[in-house]
Length: 357
Image (cartoon, rainbow, N blue to C red):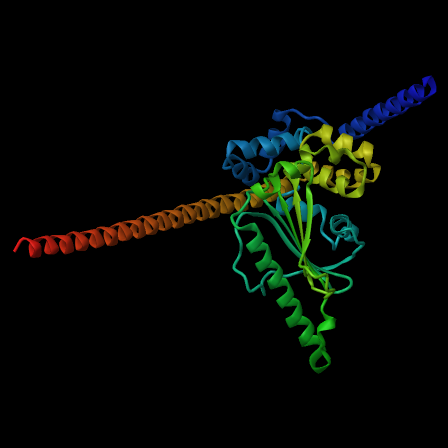
């Protein structure tokens, strides 16, 4: 027993030393600076400083906390994510993220344009990126800030759009030799920063990755082409299983990291993550790029907020219309019942009058 405890103490000590070393590395990558030092540097570029002054206070604070070496970049926002996961520059990063989610090794071949989508631009998105994998499969990776209404129905539409776009492209390439077996699986991957109520059922309290696909209740084995993955990032942060050491948890820990302590713990558990943190730290020396990324993220967030308010107002309107229709139906039913009673009263009065003759 003594030997086991001694081994355990050594392991804890080694872990503690690793965290201290990682923390040291983090502060070497992200040196501490004062707010005044950061503002002096920013004022050297008057247009950038004016842009900064026009931001809401929360975004000014987020920007300065990064520049001061206190906070990570918000990687769930489109501009920051695409900088550090651009497959043209870092071909393996997006591939490894998608591979860890779907549980199959894939290689991202290219990013596809959203312009030929048959769906209107959706709201509430922090990130929306469509990629073609090496085997011809297509994956749509999205990150949602706010849980939208009807998530299942929307995911079905996204998936159908991906499949139809693949069908159109492959059929155009193959021509008369096209067969349906040429089509590959399409993956719809949605990550929620704040997940919908469906993900927060007490029985799912520690489950942050959900996989779905159509299946027949008889077990007949048809190869259907649409698969879905839901990643609940807020559930991940709270889950006891988020501490397990594996590649999926490494990727999700990076996406949910906010402080330097988070990044230090990440490097301690996954030393290969230091390369991404190093690339992130490079932006400390390019404030013009950071200002541009923050401005783009803020613009998209403002659009999302407006779209969310519109969606909520539409929902309230629809609920009011439904309630009014139900009330009108109730009034009509009551009117019909009253009319029936009036007719019955009239009939009885007529009978009474006939008897009194």
